[in-house]
Amino acid sequence: MGPVAKSFGWGVLSTGRIAGTFTRGLAESRTGVAMAVGSRLQEAANKFGTEHGIARRHGSYEALLADPQVQAVYIATPHPQHATWAIKAAEAGKHILCEKPLAVNAAQARTIVDAARRHKVLLMEAFMYRCSPQTARLVGVIRSGAIGEVRLVQAAFGFRAGWDPASRLLNRALGGGGILDVGCYPVSLARLVAGAALKLPFADPLEVAGAGHVGESGVDESAVATLKFAGGIVAEVATGVRVNLDNVARIYGTEGWIHLPMPWGLKSAGTYSFTVHKGGGSEEVTGPVERGNYAYEADVVADAVARGAVEAPSPAMSWNDSLGNLATMDRWRAAVGVTHPEDTAS
Ligand SMILES: NC(=O)c1ccc[n+]([C@@H]2O[C@H](COP(=O)([O-])OP(=O)(O)OC[C@H]3O[C@@H](n4cnc5c(N)ncnc54)[C@H](OP(=O)(O)O)[C@@H]3O)[C@@H](O)[C@H]2O)c1
Image 1: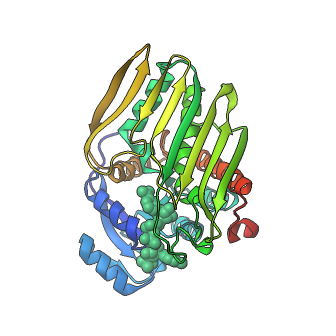
Image 2: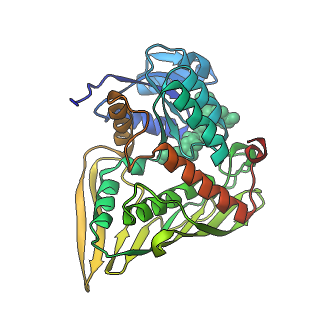
């Protein structure tokens, strides 16, 4: 396959915080161009278009999906709206990069996957760190047996958001809670690492146990889970939207261990670095990061589309990887006692 020219046309669906970050990242990508933006409000689309130099500005998501210049949409609404717009995008024949979590639960995610399959469009859940060079290197190190047999994974992603019960982070109707917002990252890393250890693209846990704190917001404000995989691999994952965590990962094997100070990757170009501790010494594993995470993510989508694929290659998220991640989070949320309206609807 030759290089894809920088002409892959993206439509940005919604104009919130991460939509802006992704669009800035797109400018650094090898392949992508922000061709159009769609918002529920024309004014917001105009403002976003001006800020990011996007000429085609639509006052509804439907109009964005009808835009012939748009090859792929980037969906960045709150989680409960992902399914509606991903399915409509598939029906419109657009390829889809949908923010994490792909849906509120595995059953809802399955409806998106079914639509992508039916309409033969690419669908990828936007876990940007899965598209970064650091993650590919990590998988290689684990597969090489450098730390022996993997026994324990520890990973955390959490932050203390300000107290705003109406915000999507704390509002149950908008998919609030740490497990869905950032708990999905350590779960996905543990499943990736267990998979690499077992020579698979990912692995799903056999057992999930969890506990958490449901605060005044009614959603999980902090939570932990233990995941037990085949091959004697156990993971401890932690999350929260009302507590700052260290946001690092450690992977312990029979011959050594790995410390990842920035498992979720770099937002801009630089150098990745993680440490392999072994035999009383340690070695830094480093490599270049030529573009930010979001640029790599956009390129993974464009390259897969250019190959005629409907799923991106591992370690990016395949459909079954996304479904397994959400099934694990369903079990974690059930253990903590947090439900969302979509749990009964689906
Ligand atoms: N990958 C990452 O690094 C990353 C980081 C942060 C967030 N995310 C994910 O991206 C998604 C959006 O997060 P965000 O922090 O960008 O949220 P946000 O700032 O609240 O923006 C969400 C946008 O969605 C649109 N929207 C559609 N229906 C809505 C509704 N009922 N209520 C509120 N907004 C609605 C709005 O855009 P319009 O008004 O233009 O229609 C709004 O600006 C979440 O699923 C989150 O998990 C990913």
